[in-house]
Image 1 (cartoon, one colour):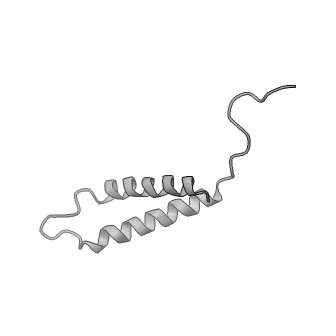
Image 2 (cartoon, rainbow, N blue to C red; image 1 turned 60 degrees about the vertical axis):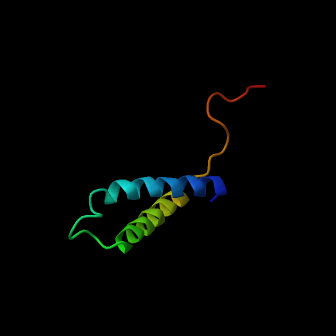
Amino acid sequence: MSRETEWIVFEKAIEVTASAVRGTMGTQGSQPAGYVGDVFREIHRALREASAEMPDRIGTTGFAAQG
């Protein structure tokens, strides 16, 4: 996986984690702090696996040059 793709996957994992744990932290009886780390690691792992299974982009989008 390219460095650029890895960075995109990392940022997406942060966004998904923030959405997933919203409302579960900071109140009485809420999840322990390590919960966010556990959720992030699982989401990041799943996104990396999914991106590894996707085919590499070959060529460009749009119309191919004729000639």
